[in-house]
Length: 486
Ligand SMILES: Cc1cc2nc3c(=O)[nH]c(=O)nc-3n(C[C@H](O)[C@H](O)[C@H](O)COP(=O)(O)OP(=O)(O)OC[C@H]3O[C@@H](n4cnc5c(N)ncnc54)[C@H](O)[C@@H]3O)c2cc1C
Image (cartoon, rainbow, N blue to C red; front, top):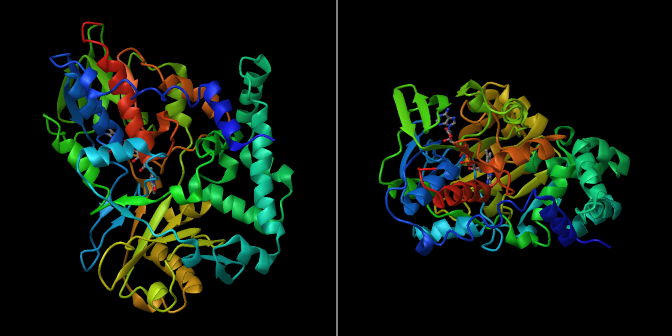
């Protein structure tokens, strides 16, 4: 029987995962050229753009970074207001996996002498809240409360996925390529329908997919296989292990501080023109000319950027259509950590309620108060996004109260990050829809004239900080081996 390792091998040969695997292998700084290689303009000061800028600088390029917002970090944003007792929470990218899974994030954390704090993921301190009942976060509790079939059905889901991947194993065989393209056309929810899962197992499957990516009706089956392959044989204890001590925003701040030219904030790019000699990038305050441009923004904001000459039809379609998740974080501070003090719990919650997934932001932070983050996604994220902020807070608090009675009376402040409404992202992170992996992916992996595309959506670690960082390394590595004379 095929294992998840086989899934990975299949996808490696498909090319969806391979393009980036060696991107940084040759990026040891010792081999890099110093001197004036030319000038690169980097658009976007998220992790992808900042890492690209930092690595290009190491290669000897002059770099100008243009950022639309009034802050660095893009989807890495640490919220310190409005919280009391000096506590903070992550509004976007939060968890870093084990060093073997997210090695490049660990590399930069170390490079800039930042610390990591562990996340409490002890399952015995977490809870399921399903069908109105709270139970320990374990297979055994699930089986005892709802019957063994719930867990068995989850296993069947992954086993069926593996069987499908077997058809992708030998991609020298034309049939395998045809299979991959065919799997990419399959709407994930339709495939789940064919499994006829037990109803509670189906709810759990959907909540998982929604929480990680988006509602299954928006996703491609091949995309899920690719994502599953990435985490092939990675034990649960190795994922979501860390946050950066003092806040994840310390990493983008540290990278930016190492740049010779400060990032230009409040500078939204409006047009990118390629000429035979270079690029002319227009922004609201003026123009920057350079030899190359690294486009390290999410795709939706590029809909209002004018490209001359026009981008290829595939890139245009990707910008117009690539599917993004709809995650909303509702982040509440409580005067005391009732879940911990009264109930010995960590706050980690998986539920069939619309709030979906809850975790404590402050497990490694001092203070009597504590912060819980509800990570609401898919259709439920979109519903919350459409509400006024007070209704959003009330909706989430009422659901938290169901799981942890007495909590609502302890709330001191609530804030939120509504990513689908953020004009500089237009969603949370990419979650490839039917047909999009085979159509759009290859277009991001090569330069388009003097434009190079970076960002989480261009790396196999789609939707991760690791993916953003790796994509920055990839474009820097590509340019690093060239000079502006090209
Ligand atoms: C709610 C949420 C939870 C997440 N959780 C995790 C997690 O637990 N672990 C994990 O690893 N990852 C997580 N991620 C994903 C991670 O945050 C992203 O993959 C990563 O930060 C993306 O970095 P990026 O550089 O590709 O894009 P961004 O961070 O979005 O950076 C792009 C930059 O481009 C700028 N920009 C856009 N348009 C223009 C323009 N026209 N001109 C100039 N600048 C422009 C933007 O303002 C932004 O600063 C999460 C993301 C979200 C939203």
